[in-house]
Image (cartoon, rainbow, N blue to C red; front, side, top):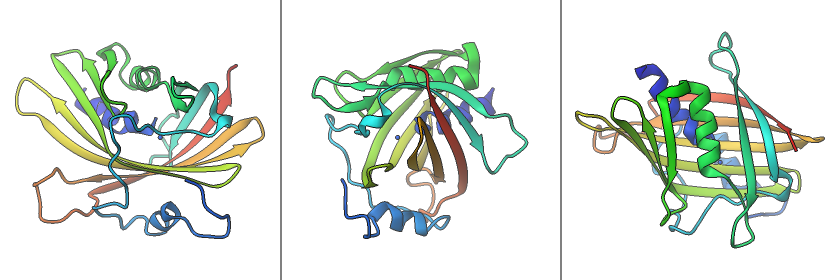
Length: 219
């Protein structure tokens, strides 16, 4: 159970300005430093109304297959993801739907429900069996579209697993690069977990993972 909960800590983060195509973007520079990542990351802190804005080719419902490239023997993670227009006319992820889909794929009925914070686009609560709940807050975000068919997004989240005992903290950064592949979307993700705030004097990543994603349209 504990291992699956920590997989959920990572999985919930998996579901992420333009510049001239010839210029190396800030996120491409970040990617070039992989796997030697450390904090602080070059990610502005979002306001409560800020969200991750996707290109129009993300719109709709998708079947997502995620492969952990550092664990080739593991079965792919299969789940759905949905992107829709919000009240401000922006294409954003359906956060509770997407987090629930990933959580159910990882934990089954151990995940009870996922709640969006009505006052912030950057905070969620996942309720788990056993009097547990996982609080996820986006503390840094940057997005870029170097070409019409490429989209990069980097998010840093603070996750707090509330238990009957002391809470457990984790900071996770996920950089995603999406490309249009015909009707599908192909993606790579680079992820780093950092020490708990105040745990050590270093902010270097303590573990890193790479993922390969394929998104196929269902609508």
